Every structure is written in C-alpha cells, then in structure tokens.
Length: 229
Image (cartoon, rainbow, N blue to C red; front, side):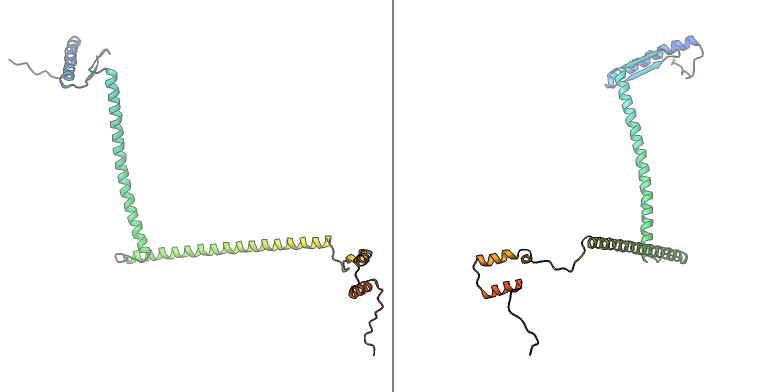
C-alpha cells in the first residue's frame, strides 16, 4: 500500500513541527550537496528556523556565492534599467521624428509649395502666418536702420568734437608762438666784418663781388636814375 499524500499546511503541533523541520532540513541540505556534486554546480542554501537559528550549506563558500549572487543581481538590475532607458529613448526618438516631419512640411508650405491638400481655412491661416512673418521682418529691418543711423550720428558728433579739440590746440600753439612781420636778419648783418676779412683773405678781386659787397655796405658810387629824361 502506497504512502498517502500529505497536505501542505502549517503543522499546529509544536513537537511534530520541530521533528518535520529537522527531517526536511537534513533532506534539503543533502539534496543540495548531491546537486553540487552530480552537476558540478555552485549551490548555497540558507535556512532560518522559527526560533531564529541559522542553518546553511554552500558548495563553494557562502561569502563567495553571495558575492557572485549580488553581482548577478546588480547586473540584472542594470540590464533592466538599460532596457527601460532604451525603450524610453526609442519612444522619445519617434516623437521627435514626428515633430521634425511636421515642421519640415510646414516649412515647405511656408515657401508656397505642397499646398494641394490644404483647405480654405488652412490656406487662410498660412496667409496670416506669412503676413505676420513679413511684418516682423520689416520691423526688424527698420530697427537695424535706426541703429545704424544712430551709430553714424554718434560717429559724426565724435568727429566734430575731435576737430574742435584740434582747432583749439592749434590756436593755443599760435598764442604761444605769435607770428612776426620782421624779416629774419642774414648772417652778414650779424657778422659784416667776417665777410670783409674773408674776401680780403682769399684775394677776391672780382668786380661783381666787390660791387655787391660795396652795395651791401652802402659804399657804392653807382646811382640809379629812373624816369630821368
């Protein structure tokens, strides 16, 4: 006669529960050891009793197995996060592609192309957008012209101020060095004797030079009579 099927539920009797725990714990640890040996697997089992007592088995050392488990857990979480991020990026990319296609189509229509499928209302809206854009362009153009005119005016005023400053500097220099109508005396007026000595020393007997020297000293006997009959 075969063994009857045991109902899996909490054992109410404390002694029976303890006996069952001990038997099944030993059987579980034995199966874990057999699995590690037969299949060359790294197996670890951790058991806490209802009283808090620890029972464990590890074929390769509990710390090593737990470290390996944590690495695998972290990598699986990272992989899940990466997969989730890729899905989100793919979704955002699709949205951006749709927006780009819409903007590109709108730009083509603003150029007056691909207007076949537009209704009258859409054409009116497009016309209004073009008018508003043209108005903005004109306003910006006028603003730039006004700025250029203002800049030219400032440069002109700066040039006027610089010219006025230069004019004042010239007037100040003229006041410091006043002009005179008196001719600058020649060298011979300061040193008449030296010329005479020079002529005598060199033995100059040229009539022209002597005449010129006499004329400069007022000793010439030549008298010019102009308008005499």
